[in-house]
Length: 246
Image (cartoon, rainbow, N blue to C red; front, top):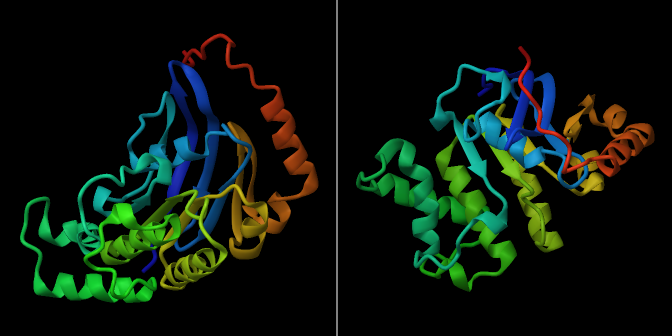
């Protein structure tokens, strides 16, 4: 199920003309499993949103032959409102919108697939629970079940294992490995360098600018991590705004 490559060509993404990602070029290969790592504020989440098309480049471009429906996106937990009155099953069923449309009726088959996804993530019997009653780990399992139902070719995960228990992390990493085995392209923003080394064969190390991109064992070297940390320490949030090239 390999998807076309995603190519970044001199990509710069800015907020108020201050670059969060600066002149980044490279390619996510079809079917690859890649971690995006780097210091806090390095532009990792910004890059995911640019790939999704949620942020427009200030310079350069994101190149691919994909439709919006080819992407499955898991935002950071802090960006999700869990007070909305919706059940676990209905949350998972939101992943079927590719086949039902925004206002279409959910088919019996979709309901069966949603329940099967809940079994896969270890939440059988939770269908009628309100999402606000779940623990952080349980809710993350629900979101992974929704991605399973969506059946996307490209999976983008923004810090998917933050503040969840070790067992849930192991179970969800197994699902990530399954996606990779299916030939999907998986890109995950991660802050745990040991997780990166243990489970992600490719890494993009970012500190607003590119530090390294390739095999994890090469990219996550002590020298590269030191360079990323040094660049982060030199960031000046009050620097003059970046002007587009003429």
